[in-house]
Length: 612
Image (cartoon, rainbow, N blue to C red; front, side, top):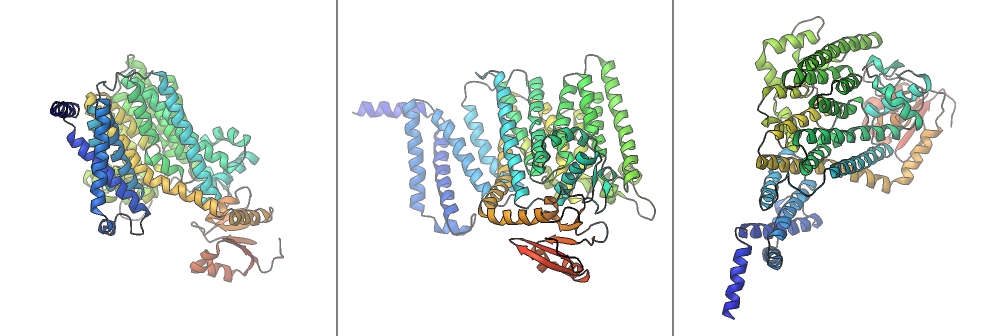
C-alpha cells in the first residue's frame, strides 16, 4: 500500500513538474470567475466593494480548491499538463472578458486586464512542443478562415448598423445626408442633397468623393438605405483579405501567424465602433489602403497604382494616405527593379498632390472650400485668411508646439486605443523609413483639436489604423519567434478586451429596443410615410434620416444658418419639452401640433390646411 502511494506521489510530481503555480492560479481564477458571475446577478453595483462584503469566503476557497483538484485529476488521467494549458488561459480570459463587459469601457482598465491574460497564454504556449510555424494547418485554411471572418463581420456589423437605423438612433450626420444623396444620384445622376447644409447643393461642395459613382450601380440594384450599410460593412470586412495577403508575404507559409493577423484586423475596436456610427466615405479607406500596401510589398506597380487612384477618389484629404505610401515605397521598400519603384513612387506623389489641388478647386467651386478650420489650432494670430500655409509654417518652425498639440492627455489615450489592439507592434519597428506609414495618424488624428478625429468611434481612423497595422506586421517579421508570439497574444487579447465592452452593449441595446418596441416603431414609420411627398419638411436628426427618399427635407437645427420654416415639422415630444430654442421656433412661426404617437410629434403651419 505504501509502495502504491509512493508511486502515485512520484507520478504526480513527475506529471505536474513546474506546473503547481499554474494549478493554483487556475483554482484562483475559477473562484474569481464564479464570484464575478454571482456579482452580475447581485443587486450590488458591479465592481464595488459591496460585492466583496457579501462574499462567503469559505465558499470562495472551496470553489477554488475544487477547481484545482479537478484540473489536477484530469492532468493525472491524461498523464499530461494539456488540460491545464487549456483551462488556465480560458479561465483567465473569461474572467477578463466578463469584467470588461460589465464595466464602463476604459482602455487603461483593458490594458490592466491584458496582463494576467498575457501571462496565462504565454505560459500555455510555452508548454507547446510545436513551434508556431510548424503546424498541421494547411495553408489553404487561411483562405477559409479569412472568408469566415469576413462573413461573420459583415453580417454582424451590417445587422447592427441596420438595427441602429430602424430603432431611430441613426443621425442625419452622417447617414441621412448620404442616403438622400444616393437617392438624388439614382434619380438625377448628381450628388444633390438638402440635408447637408439645409439647402439644395451638391455634396462635392463639401467633400470631393467620386467613389460614390462606383458604388451607385450596386445601390441601384436595391435602392434602400440598408444597402449602403451592408456595402460599408462588407468593404471594411474585405480588408481581411488584404491582411491575409500581407501576412503571407511577410511570414511565408505560416498559417497560424496569418490567421492571427487576420483576427487582429477584424477585432480592432476602431473598425467595429465606426461602423455603428452611420455611413461615411472614409470607411472605404481601409480596404483600399491595405490592398495598395499589399501590392507595394509584392512589387506589383500596376495594381498598386490602381488602388492608389481608388484611394484618392474617396476624398480630397485621402491624398495624405497616398503620400504616406509613396514615401514608404521610395524610402523603405527594396524592389528588384529600382527604376520601376522610383517611377511608381514619384507618380503616386505627383498624382496625390495634383488630385488634392484639383479637389480643393472643386470644393471651392461648389461650396465654401476645404474644411481646414479643423486645424485652427495651427492658425497664426491676426486677421486675414488662414489656411494650410499657416499649418505648414508652424510645423516647420515650431516642433515643440507640434508635439504639444499631438500628444495631449486625451490624444495619448486615443493612441492606447489604437496601439493596444495591435500589441504595440508598430512601435517595435527598428527602421525609421517604415514609420512613414504613421504619417496619416499624426496628420489626420493627432494634430487637429477637432474632437472626433482622435476618437475611435468615428470615421477618421479608417485610413490610419490599417496603415498602423501594416507597420506592425512589418515589425513582427523582424522579431524572434517568442517575441512575435507574445506580441500577437497581446494584440488578440487587447482587441477582445477593448472591442467587446464597446461593441457588445451597443448591439445588444439596439436588439432589445427593437424587440421591446415593435408597435411603437411601426407607428412612427406609418406617420412618416403618410407625410406629403410634394411638400417641404423640417425634421430633427433621427427623423430626417427616415425621410431620405424625399427631395425637400431639411434638418432642425440648422448648424450653418437659420433653421428653415417649412409646412411640416417633425420632432420628438421630449425635444420640445427640453429645448427652449425649438419651443420658440414652433411658437414664433405659428406651428400647430397635428398629431403625436409613440415618440414622434408632427406640427404644421397654422395657415396651412390639414394634409393628412
